[in-house]
Length: 64
Image: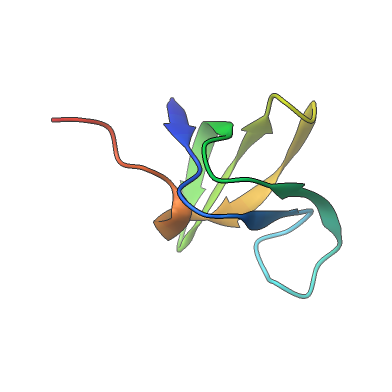
């Protein structure tokens, strides 16, 4: 499910902030959510061609 990053954040290899940082994502970047895991979303950052975790709260919610 496509979402938009709301503020600049790091894409991590795991759901915890102390895991490897894979990329920096900017506000407005697209993020394809594959699964929600607790407070994080696991998915694809298409602009970077990487898969990882971001805080779910930093993703724009789809319009109702």
